[in-house]
Image 1 (cartoon, rainbow, N blue to C red):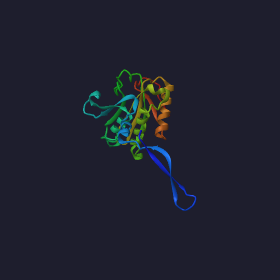
Image 2 (cartoon, rainbow, N blue to C red):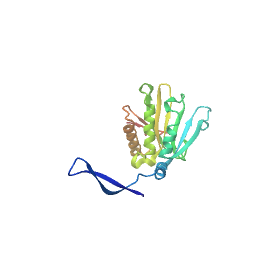
Image 3 (cartoon, rainbow, N blue to C red):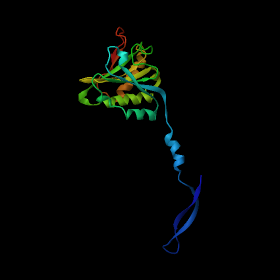
Length: 211
């Protein structure tokens, strides 16, 4: 790194004029060519995530799902989030699904088959659908569920007339400890004051509960 002399000023002893004294050298400010590579560095996520858009155009659920894109870095996530429509602005009965790559947002997917979901009903009057949705997304990409991150499949937001639905899908409805921990994290991160409900995808199962 190139250097240039530095001068400091000290008070002269015989008059009011300061005396200039050399104190050695100091590094020159970093050049643009040194800074740019640091700004261009991306920060990888632990998992790759797919954003899906749901629009009711067919009687077959799978035909209503559209895979928008995948993200695997923090920068790509924000680039996506800042350029898509806010969840609250979607048309009625439309939805976003944000799932780990390789897991389709369908009950029939092998990873989801034995799982369930945490559900928050968000009343329109509170106007916090977008806030809750973002908090869940940040929790997902930040691996915010501690030792139970592997039990999380993805998140969803569905726009309804009177209250929107937001939540997390998990892979094992029978694992009460994992699901309760995930539910408590959801309540803490969203600061939800109301009840949230856990429901198994298989309605014949009896392991439903609330927090």
